[in-house]
Image (cartoon, rainbow, N blue to C red; front, side, top):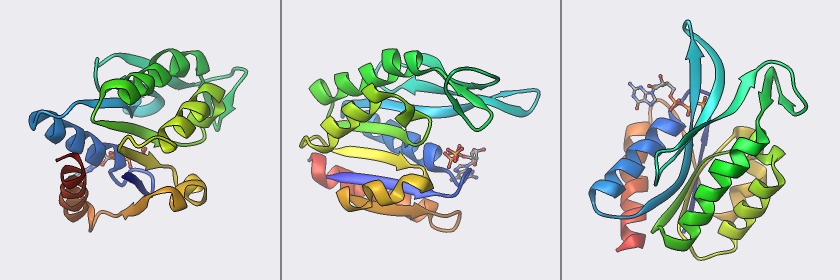
Length: 170
Ligand SMILES: Nc1nc2c(ncn2[C@@H]2O[C@H](COP(=O)(O)OP(=O)(O)OP(=O)(O)O)[C@@H](O)[C@H]2O)c(=O)[nH]1
């Protein structure tokens, strides 16, 4: 089972993914991988951090400023993604009931190790729940079930996706 959630920026992809992760943990399932949250300073978005779902470790993924690898106005810290995010996915492949990756997008795919571990997950039988930046829909839409989140359907989709995962994990 592979589920991909896409949608416009700010529609609630991370929030829905976290709600599903918490519910699965409450039901006793082992959840692994990571989610991405924005970093804000004085009310302004200045970057993104990743938080691992099994160990709650945090690291900065990207921050406004100049540097070797950039996406938009953000410099991307590949070494942080590889050390924390990729390792969390590898642990999840080994011993979680489901791998969660938020998100599959331009920043993350700057990392070769990230691309490789995503391929490993896709080619495994491990259940996957991933959020998908809208620019990456074509690359992944044929590799699982694609849901497009909107403000109107996000509550209904939470129930539908959670039930689909529970049916698979039972
Ligand atoms: N009331 C309400 N607010 C929500 C819901 N889902 C998300 N939000 C709010 O909408 C804002 C964006 O939520 P995210 O989950 O970060 O949205 P996202 O699609 O992951 O955003 P990007 O990854 O930056 O594109 C946050 O302030 C959330 O608190 C929801 O179901 N209900």
